[in-house]
Each structure stands twice: as structure tokens, then as C-alpha cells.
Image (cartoon, rainbow, N blue to C red; front, top):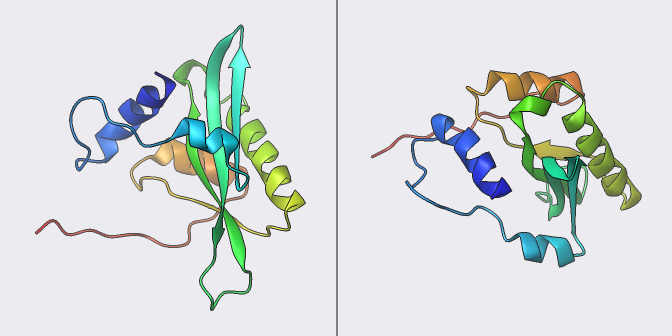
Length: 135
């Protein structure tokens, strides 16, 4: 159910998503995987935020061997702007650093200005723009 909230928030930014119920994540596998840290925030017994860090191998030509890719990033609308995202990313950053990781990356839709501002506020910077051409 929480995953569907994430998908509903992203649908306006991605016309390629199928209609109806879809799934991005294998949450059970993420919970047990040693290379993934999954965090959630809750208030009054309700999930209000989530995120994961997944250790990925870097390209052989960059300065580090691995990086932490962040995903499942979501804060319930009524909790946005209250530091929930910062807390989740802080926990994921600490986990990644404890494993010798020196860089975190994430993807955000370029038209999702509030999310971009939230990530920039905690230190992320824009790096690469992925472009598409439907044919």
C-alpha cells in the first residue's frame, strides 16, 4: 500500500508507467539483502517516510569502486518539510559510510522541483540528465 503512494506521486512525472497497480520494489528481498539498508519513518503507528540505500558497483573509470544508490524515497504529503527526508537520508548515509562508501546517488524526475530542492538542501547536486525519445 505504501509503495502505491510512491507510484501515485510519480505518475504525473512519468507517462511511460502502466495504468493500474504496478510494483517497483521487492521489499521482502530488500529487507534481507546484505547490500541494502531499508529505513522507514513512522508517527503514531503510521508509515510516513521511506528510503533505501543499495550498494552498487561503480564504473571502472571512476575514483571509487562502489556507491550507494538511493531509492524508495518518499515522505507522506502531510509530513513534507518537517525533516523526515533528512533523517532517512542521514541514516542511509551513516550506513553507507560504515561500509566504506564515499558517494550516494539517486534519480529524481527533472520536473519534480520540490523533491529536487529537498535533495539539494541536504547536499545533493545535479550531475547528469537522462534524456528519452519515444520512437
